[in-house]
Length: 280
Length: 223
Image (cartoon, rainbow over all chains, first blue to last red; front, side):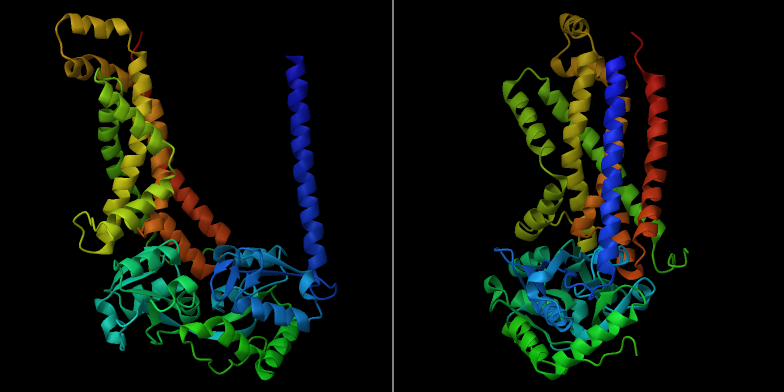
């Protein structure tokens, strides 16, 4: 009995020590990365699973429009590409990752909204996406009135799904799924007629090798999404620097090149660069 | 602090109502299917025993998400089984009940089988000696006692089922977890929203557990 008691004590002491050190290292991490550009490393949050925007390839590298934006901004902040640490920023975790200092900034199809601005700040926008439909090639519709007759698919809880249900076509038959891949399966085998979300995301899927030629964008504009770079709240210094980097990227053609490279294969026309509105 | 909680916009009670419906329908379905499976597992027919054992071991060891997604992607999208639903909403709800029933039945079966083992063998033998058939032995002698001794484990299964209904969000059933996703997307308040939904589930499951705990004491077979 005595032995067991002391063993329990030792175990709980060990657990306590471990958790305590874990907290400690977290804190120091957050502290050192707070400055962002003062030291020459950056931790950037991106999507790992969004073709054309932020995707981890089989060999561990990252590709996509968001990634190209992040690389350019990092270079402008004086950080070598090897010194960038990528972190996965899943949609519901983005605010907390910024608040906890896990990342210096987030470039992950992060729409600028008033609710989010209460928690974090943004730089940019670096892109204005529009909600659109992805349909099987040759079947796409040309007017918004026809949306109500379609079997639509989108990701459950997403802004696009909500817009369909609340404004665009409340009577439409909407199938929400946990991810886009289930919708693409449905689109392929005919269970749904259209997948709806931001045209950037749709273009990324349509441009994938295995989907090329099968799907096309309907080209409807169902409402804009302003993608911004998420930064810690009221960090105006970082905001100005990122805004300046984005301005430069718009002007020297690197931005248009990135759009063309990542979204072009789906027939996505390079739009005009957006106007920087955050921090002005 | 709670100004994001706009009940006009977010139908919190409606979402939990769907959760409760999912849980109740699946509970009824899985109790029936689980009882049949348990009967199969103790039956004198080898083929039935093999089927029962096979079902339990396959379904119990398959992740629920896989089962639920299979009902939608496999049964509905590929095989076209819409369960008589006209809209995605109806179809998804029924598919989710089907998936949850199939999954939970395996656990009900095992809980019930452990209850059957608590009934002394002599009782079944005595019933056989009186000339009762296998189904009569099960129905009149063994199962009534077995059920009484497994109310508490079945309460566990039922509570797990209530929480498992959140997986139905994966195929778009508009229950609590899906509303939570929607609210987090709009409101950027992960902890508060998460807390509200956790509380909602506690309010659903805690009374279930307390009630069934009380029932379990009341109906226990005193031996």
